[in-house]
Image 1 (cartoon, rainbow, N blue to C red):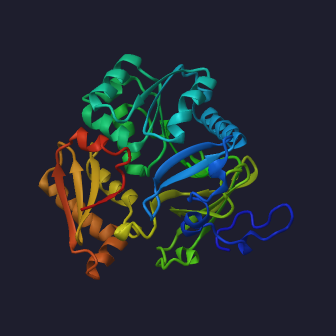
Image 2 (cartoon, rainbow, N blue to C red; image 1 turned 90 degrees about the vertical axis):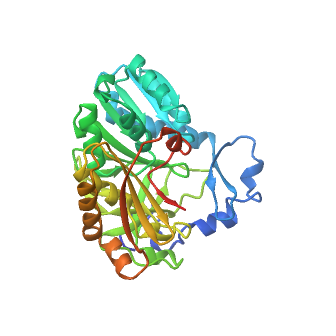
Length: 385
């Protein structure tokens, strides 16, 4: 099996012979009221975005799952911020498991913590940042975008370390965010997790790659292996498949994330071979339309190479791809250069235009409206109209 890092379990069973746990399998057997876990009073239940049948997904955690989640997240945060003498942390998050446990994790690290809801107007976020002056900010890229767009001097908040979660963060975007905060890129660390699995991986600046957290066995497979009619991905891209050795109340055995990673490979970490990947670039899925060929990661990276203070929103209207750029310096000649770069430097977009799947790319300057941004916690995605 392509990309398989731990092909056998302790009993010698080849993992590649086990079936993949796809979304259709989960909808038939787990995301259903017939799931026997539904009636268990001893389980934690978290709800997240809907299935293809428009049902809210209910994902269960046993007490052991919950303990493992906290332990592993605490271990990752200890690596990232625990040894640097920081005293104050702010969790500026959306909803869900990551938000629910953030305060607990920071408190266990001996830090004073404040939590802010993404639903508040951006002015309230800025007020709390200015008053509390957290050294560590735990947030999502979309929320940090809102903070940077609305702040005249974001470096004045005194943030020394940013831990990201929940969305794709390209190198260009991270570089821009670091410059505006007055810190180095090594002081912004992306983490990757899901409600189904928990904390999955974190970016190691030492190795220049994402390393997997405790309890994760990872493999990367071609999109065709999912047998759902997916077209082959570009060279170097594969779909991440995960097995968790700690999850009890979720079938985390060859679970298909539908997240696409680049450069999946083994690296040596402290003399031990570890699975890793270079970047997380997009998701695939039957509900994503053109999204399975379009990478927000690549689009944002191109834009940030031309504008150091830009935020991006991508929309598909009919067969037209619209890239809305929020920046006071978004002059027309710069927007034209961005459009040309998008067409020529991202092969998938050029191919889709040539094949008539997309009519073309429109890159336009737009005005930042926080009310639009806070309507949804995740904005680094493709919007359809």
